Image (cartoon, rainbow over all chains, first blue to last red; front, side, top):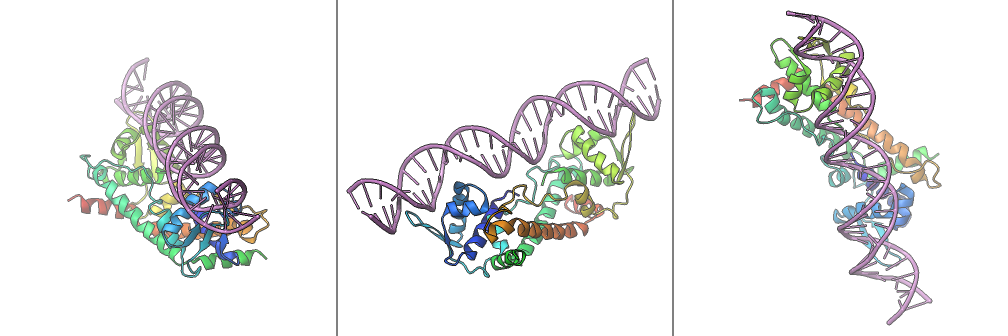
Length: 140
Length: 140
DNA sequence: TGTACTGTAATAATATCAGTTACAGTTATG
DNA sequence: CATAACTGTAACTGATATTATTACAGTACA
């Protein structure tokens, strides 16, 4: 899995943490530990999915529009990283004479698909608010 | 996730499928669709974990020693790909002044750890025999 | 002794990922 | 209106991960 999912979650939690729910890409990037351009790319997806609003120009930036307890990591996973569980490489060859070689591809595909669904439902149970709560717990 | 897990599962299923449970790295590689050297590397791990026996020299190769219905994909996952769910890159910086920036790392780590445990328990429920069964089902 | 294997490391080719730069477009503000 | 502070997006670079390939030492059978 690439880390856009992590960046997205971190950004949303950070916005939820700020009293006014607003920050520029540079402020977010600083908190996340990456570059502003990368944050903007991730936030662009979150905007299209309706979780944040953006304002260009001076004094602009990103604002959380969704309720922190209504957005789950599952929602974020689906828009940022769906399908990342399955390796890009697949074994077997549908044209193989052998039953194993010719069908393994499909069988493994199904196994990874159900595994991914499980993963999603695990993420579905965690909201942005939950994450923020965990942050505050360990930040004694 | 890299595909050594897939190669390992495919190889074991292939051995379980063969009447005598034996094949050379080249025969397996041909069925899997990769190179013999890569198969040997994967099988080396499986041998050290006790799932196959190997015999060097002429007429040698790999033989399945475990019961196909006693080995789960979870077993294979643990030896081949454990920890592959978590992205290598992590956000945040423990030295950050901000509670979010300094603790996100740990919180996300925990989230990925429990997600991985879920994934494992999903794989625990699937045996090599199950996979072979699914292969035979779709191989009408 | 020669042939057919495994074991393992090294190297090369390719793909993916993250960092960086660049610049056009947008908006607040003096 | 001009400037500064932003976003949006693409292009490029460097780093890292992944897969393919080659090579060769070691082992066992015939």
